Length: 222
Image (cartoon, rainbow, N blue to C red; front, side):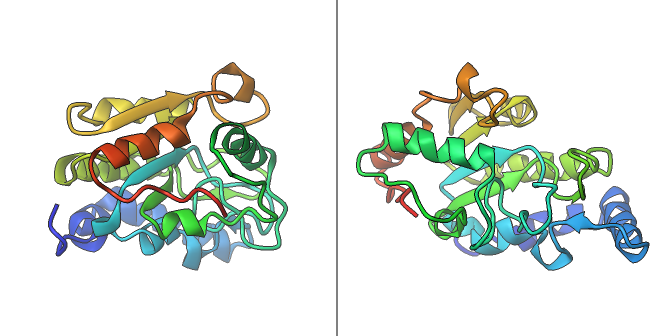
């Protein structure tokens, strides 16, 4: 992977595709009609802003943004400072507390510290209507995030993919396991965390893989 490659250069053609432009148009119309769409327009692509392509080490893939007010800010599973961590994020912290030596429960749920270390916090769908989980699944976002996974697979070596839940797990087929580490688990939501997320040990396994490649490990403490 060369340092002059960026998300913009890799995804510019995809963002000119009719389906992508239509998705943005539809979302703008919803906002104009008074519908609440999360995250805000300025935050929708935060995952790419906070994790430059050249610094990418880990991909944590979620489903779609939180659909409650003030929660989603463009990073999967993360919430802004001052917002109580939702149940899925609380379960992520529990897994960290039980498996990562020295991890202490944080007082907030903002995962920007991970993103700034090279953890792409991506959802398979990038927007949602208030109170309607997965309401934007048919807008074309999954086609776009398929492309994101494809360019990572093509242009990078030794990336860790943490795929939690069925929707994220379906992306595994787009990753060359001879080049990257793919770890799958149940979604950390209260409905499924005890069916394979708790005890998955993904955070330690990710760092072990990075260490083997001579890459800096992720400081999971927030």
